[in-house]
Image (cartoon, rainbow, N blue to C red):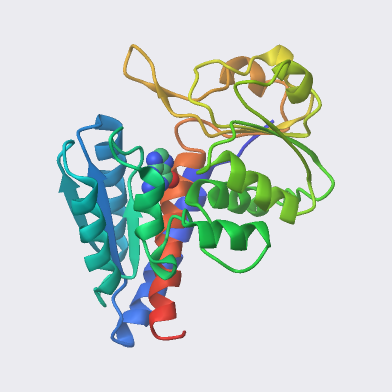
Length: 282
Ligand code: GUN
């Protein structure tokens, strides 16, 4: 069994990003990222702080707009429209989830597609489905980079994705289809989850449920990617996979923490640099 070490790969990617930024700065372009975080969800604020710190470490200019939970939808839209027009901002990220009274689709559709570093705008979602160059959501893109780094080619593999969210499961499905895998996508209404997971050469899980995937649900020699991030009662982070027992059966597995999480942030940095490059048609 080999560990897919997202932490160490993310450090390599960040070092390369830092060099890329030096080159951009020499051309008078400092990549700028604006992050909007609404409400007081502790996890969201933690993620935003991590993104801010990563930007600072490599020389991306970042600003964080913190808005109260009871902010109006129109005020959010107005703020995004201002950032759309701001020439110093290359990327705009709206931290999800948004408070219940806010129409998430309307907010995400307001971010201009050329600054959509999360790849959540319908235009970019469509481009990904058509396998055209676009902004790709950071978590699934990070998974693809991790697989590639360890020479795992999804072509022809039977893949099972557990979790069909817009930000992880669905873009993951498109990326793997584009890479010629056979993709099976499961969700909360799937009748017999184990029947699906047991067939997978590559099992990708992103649901947010501790120990959802147990040893008996995994094929011998499978590659297991755990996208879940859950906080246990003792405060420690854990994924959706019963790591201790599942790892014994795997050819490769991602740890939590230190697997997909750091890759997500590294991909945000890459997407922000991509956005900044398009400012000068680089
Ligand atoms: N909330 C959980 N994951 C993500 C993500 O990748 N991007 C944004 N914007 N919000 C999230």
